[in-house]
Length: 125
Image 1: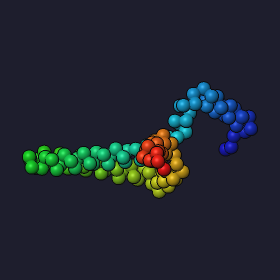
Image 2 (image 1 turned 45 degrees about the vertical axis):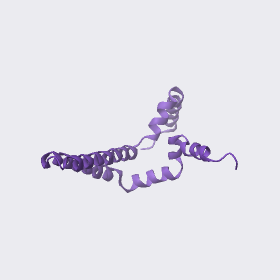
Image 3 (image 1 turned 180 degrees about the vertical axis):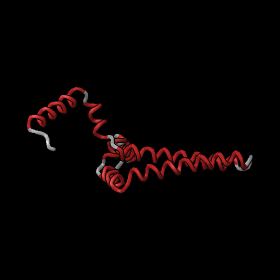
Image 4 (image 1 turned 135 degrees about the vertical axis):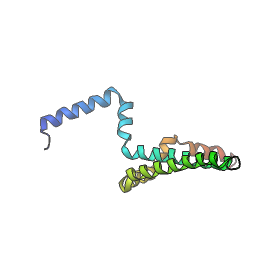
């Protein structure tokens, strides 16, 4: 059921007041989504997987039982990655790649790459 014109006007006034009252919070809410949350969990799962693998390799010479803990860490991380990859799905993957291509990733890092390129340029050129 669509909103009436009066309800739409009230909703737009509430939205405008929200953006005026706390613009930082409004921006953070508009930028966050289920896809970003799932992608963040995938990244943490990958880090945890590498930690588990490192623990496994370092403790394998000590004891197989202790090394098995590293395997369990890796297994838990893999299950977490798989679950969040399912949440991300095809639509989420398309949204993430679109945002990376549009340059939002550059704004996240604050143009650090450009500053590095500027520093590496020689002054004599």
